[in-house]
Amino acid sequence: MEYLSLVMFALVCLVLLLGYPVAYSLAGTALLFAGVGLLTGTFDEAYLHALPNRLYGILTNQTLLAVPLFVFMGVTLEKSHIAEKLLAAMAQLFGNFRGGMAISVILVGMLLAASTGIVGATVVTMGLMSLPAMLKQGYAPSFAAGSICATGTLGQIIPPSIALVLLGDVLSSAYQQAQLDMGIFSPDSVSVGDLFIGAIVPGLILVGCYILYVLFVALFDQQKIPLIDKNKAAAYPSIGKLVTALLPPLLLMLMVLGTILTGFATPTEAAGVGASGALVIALLQQQLGLKKLREIMLSTLTVTSMVFLILIGAALFSLVFRGFGGEQVIEDIFANLPGGKFAAILLVMVVIFLLGFILDFIEITFVVVPLVAPVLLAMDIDPIWLGIMIAINLQTSFLTPPFGFALFYLRGVAPASVKTIAIYRGVIPFILIQLLLLIALAIWPELITWLPEQLAN
Image (cartoon, rainbow, N blue to C red; front, top):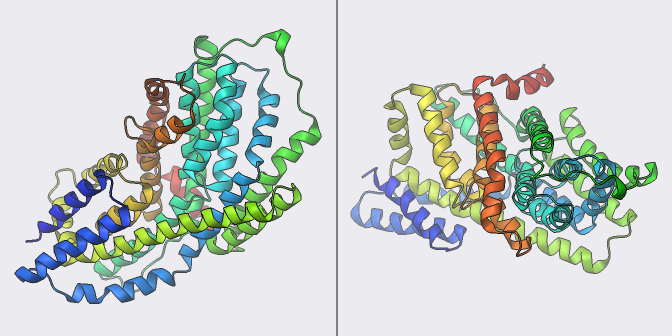
């Protein structure tokens, strides 16, 4: 009967493909199978008795307080037009170099990712501002669309990322559970801050690879990136304009990440600093009235409610899955795989990559990761390395045609002249870059673990 857990997992994926809301799909499928299990005597109702305690734990989780605060910070920066001023200044700075506009998009996208941590907002914002300008300069639609989509997904990996906040909380519980299962009754812990620190080097490597790819195309492919017309060279921005555009997001990023890296604040406290800083920036730039503040608060409430409702549905799903012996099934599958630890990690990465086509990172983090992470971590896999690998894997699946979420976000704001097939073609080189990064991180895990170890010492 334990294989009913796998049937339940397959059914919930099917229900989600049909377009039903995620939280209700998770909870409804779980209750349906629990009811069948109770009627047939194959499910212990004691698992359902644990639900109130699980929900209380979710609502009193201090780490998850960072979610509404980071969302508030990101939405405030989006509404205060920080990105528009930043992109205009950077485009002027690099605009006289071939490929300069694309480099500007990548650098601005990196700063937006570090300031907001929201993939959808970054892709839409950059698509509305950058895509028309790149097309006007003669960039190939495929290259312009690909660079914007890839840059937008940096919010998945560059801290402070909401994806890393949620992953950190889930991995912390899974790591402690794995150690208890191994008979370690004074378990080590892993925090969201550890994931933030571990993501810095891979994130910077990814940005550097994107820029190198742009420079390579600029040198060898005039069809994708046009030559600069010397007669239409733009004036360089003044120092004052550059500082005014760069200083607010840089200061905010330093305040949030700096307080975490130096140990002065937890990620939740740093999120409070970021939310307050974003409000101050919006007020100083006279971009915040009561109407806009109301929009920001409503948007924050909507996103936060969605996250927590999905988390509640996932908690119920996880309990029923365990009640049917699903954890044991997964453990048996991994134990019997030829290739041991490597094969288990590869299988999980492939499954998460494929699920990224139909599920958002929130659903995967709350549903899939709690099921597989304890088994993997019991194989003596570093939790920080595993978390960053999952985050980059999800980032790659969000770019991959035909179902990548970033592609849908850009398609929604791109002009009709940019064909969908052009967007698909444009992201392929960036997907290859991310896959190569995943391989490099698998071969040299120190790229992830070195900085956390140094700061811990």
